[in-house]
Length: 353
Image 1: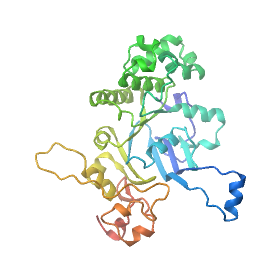
Image 2: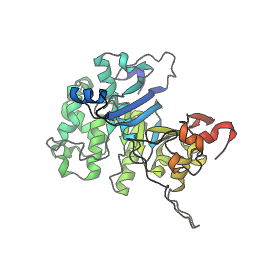
Image 3: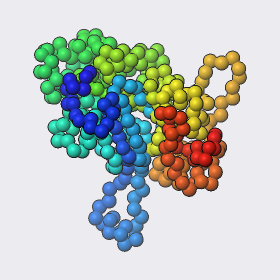
Image 4: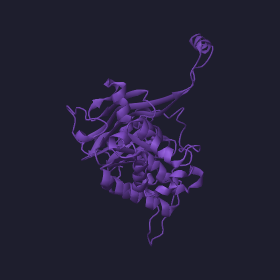
């Protein structure tokens, strides 16, 4: 879809690369318990401790170019789903800025922000939990395009429009009179895809979208995503912990650890020349069809609590290469090869891993 023809508005890209569709700068998302006036007074008087804050996303910079598939990888609890929800506009960042086609979203009117949110749709991990059990599939798929005028603008009837979205997602329109509990897991996920496509998005944020499905169904859904990418010129942020899957479908890969981006590179580069010790540890444990024997060793230690992350480099308690500086100073992302950045102190002064 040409940005000039986008139903979500063509915005100025002054000073930005024209192919950058979405950009996040210094994004953070903090969760914490709200305090009432009494609790605030007690905290101010030193009679109570302030509530702990969970920094799920910690000063992340992210760009997504039109038409590419960006893989976002990390262990459970690293903040990748929260970052996906921030990108999709489901939750607001606590800090930082989001740009759509080079325009700061905060500077737009509420109507313009609403149109942009429609342009970025999310497909969730659990297809059953994300579908309203009281609504028929016809209502699930058709509700948003009716409300936002997509059906009226298409010149088609409601039935024709919904049938088209279901066929595009690989489902027979005859299923539209059923409810979510009457469908299989793969069919439910396809309904989630049809619902997202019904508002003509430009970006799909897929949050572990095939993790709960059987392997054969996973392959069908992935093939569907790739077909839709070609047909509709879609852009994807694909969140997963399955590195072999990310290697297969992504153009660029971002590695997260405890709320921070630790490495980012094109998919071929990151799988052939991983730089960060965490990335190397993840790639070392990918099962592969090899005749030689391999010894699999899990990462030492547990993922630290995001409520009280380690100082300095968050990965240092589990890193076999950690030294004193890692415990004190947060490493910054630095270019280690063309289009390849990594946040590790070992890259300074020519030190290698």
